[in-house]
Amino acid sequence: MNSRRVNVEDYRRLARKTLPRVIFDYLDGGAEDEKGLAHNRNAFDQWRFTPHRLTDVSQRDISTSLFGTRWSAPFAIAPTGFNSALWPDGDIKLASAAASAGIPFILSTASNASIEEVARCAEGEKWFQLYVVQQQLAEKLVMRALKAGYTTLIVTVDVGVNGNRERDRHNQFSLPLKSTPSLILSGCLHPSWTLRFLQNGMPQLANFVSTENGSLQAQAAVMSRQMDAGFNPNSLKRLRELWPYRLLVKGIIRPEDAEVCISCGADGVILSNHGGRQLDGSLAPIETLAEVVARIDRPVLADSGFRRGSDIVKAICLGADMVLLGRATLYGLAARGQQGVDEVIALLKAEVDCTLAQIGCPAVDELSAAYLRRVS
Image: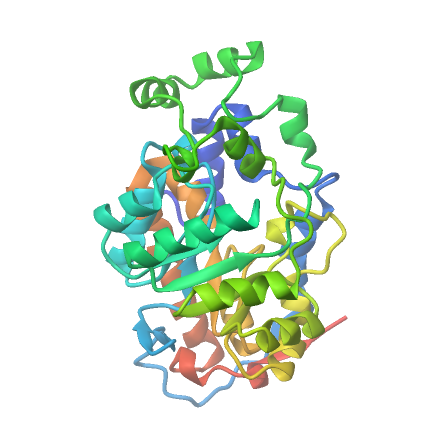
């Protein structure tokens, strides 16, 4: 861990210095006024710890079990797209960092390395996240992931239309990147990024660059989140029939929607508001987490807004089985490549451990709502 960078925000600041503005805004931005971004962070303040004292915390265990596997920490790397715009081979570096750290990695449909390439180049258990642009193409991607050895399918359902991401619109962000005057100027002011970019070429959505299903139109549809707005429970059941292993549904907020997912055969859900990138006025997942956990008897994971080990501990106290990290590890990637991802993972593990000690809990497995109190 680098002594000069002691929290995720330090890596965010370094990423901002490293990346051209158009790329940083794509990474950092949200929908419309971005109040949802702030709310995701502020929502954690609704819960305060009630530490237990006279408890032996001389030895602490931050590992956790999920789907029969013991993981080194209660968090995973979330699916994120266009990562090679942050650092060359970004998807592979994220996957390698996750494998080294003993946590799950989730590959996005919008990755710059293909399903097969990540499977070849990175060790560790890998999960695949599916955007359903159209049903036939989705089924082909599912079968590719199955053949490549992915163990878990994650179906994202909160992108019926693209969120109104005004930073990206102001910057004319698109795929392929447009050589606008602002991008050229910003590239000149960020020579290290520009050199890496020129050496490695324009990132493409590798899962769509093939003789079978490749087209710039399909890539543009994914980047602009032009998904199947008609996706419904029957669509989910069809994917359940195709996929023989674990299947999770991502993008859930309401408890009743979680129940529908389980009734359609899902093995669990991921509470998410897409990191505030879709709907600016959404509740944060942490706000409905306890209610969802009470309504379904399957694993519940959560993402959106997690920046601290204490955030992660609060989610586990409220019943989450695991937390997914999106921007947090991407800031590390953008700042320092895989080394930055390694460092962010290490510092969050240290923060989880410190939080356990501070609240008087010797193990993640012993966390419960008794360690929290909701305040107005």
